Length: 340
Ligand code: FAD
Ligand code: EPU
Figure 1 (cartoon, protein in one colour):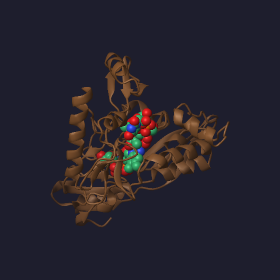
Figure 2 (spheres, protein in one colour):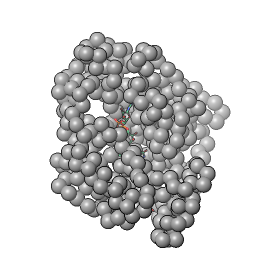
Figure 3 (cartoon, rainbow, N blue to C red):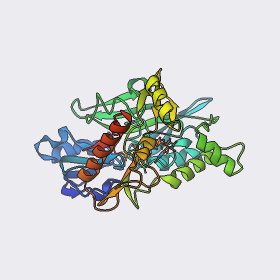
């Protein structure tokens, strides 16, 4: 819990951006978090940045405040019913490690979310999702420390405003909370989601006709490693933009012009979700590189740092991409990554 000054965050963000935090400390209990208040000068704790694995952040400048890294660990079975387990994990637990723990114990529901980088505590923030599942589908509740009120609040699923890559923690409660623990409701009888086309294809390739949750996890891991760059090798934060929702009428008009445009069902009636990666690819950005900032050669939705790119260079590239998509398709992309 030692407080450090002008601390480099280069190794603590998956883009590998070389910036510093004015103050930095990690905490592994709620009590330690409270203690930190006394050490950090000038009330910098009023608006601290709670850092998990740093895999969904682009730093564009040095952070002139306190960065507090959440290292609260522990996984425990809270309760059990005929059909479900309620499992609680400390916010600092590694997400993929937690998913593997569930699979090893036959707790079903999170297998499609294998290999997503980051921590358990960040998973509700953007309601992480992949391959047809979002954490809202298994979320039970969480405890979070409110900096201003100095209380611990419990949020149930209905309180969280979960949507596609969205929650109340990104809006009304932005920067006001430290998520301490998250609970998930996991199933005893798996209800597998294999509808995401490529999973079925992957299972068929392996001649698996009645998959276990471990098989689904392995299929997802294999698909992900085939196209997403490993941040340990090339800096990135996964999808840089959200897949946009467009009115059905606009989609039909684009489909006439571009018959191969991928469109997906969305939760919003009369709206279609389209693949931002396809739009970016169509505008010729895939594989683009300027100095060390680029657009990944296998997945155009992923912006990358080949080594020494600054956050501003990645930001400028994202602006250029937004402008060209708007120009060609009349669609404005929204960033998924948190910009600081
Ligand atoms: P950080 O980047 O550390 O933080 C993200 C935000 O959450 C920040 O605003 C931070 O302040 C806040 N925060 C973090 N922890 C806490 C806490 N305990 N309390 C309060 N606020 C907190 N995302 C998906 O949804 N689906 C994917 O398939 C996916 N694939 C990815 C693939 C790659 C290669 C990479 C690099 C990223 C991918 N992501 C994906 C994005 C990322 O992994 C997730 O958003 C993840 O949940 C971020 O976790 P983190 O701990 O790294 O959060
Ligand atoms: N596509 C292209 N060119 C590209 C990239 C994609 O044409 O360069 C096309 C693909 O061929 C496919 C479609 O776009 O038809 C969708 O691509 P993909 O299946 O790779 O998924 P995505 O929409 O790009 C989303 C999530 C990912 C998640 C995957 C799997 C968002 C913003 N991204 O990507 O999440 O892992 O689906 O469910 O919703 C993340 O959030 O960081 C992330 C990686």
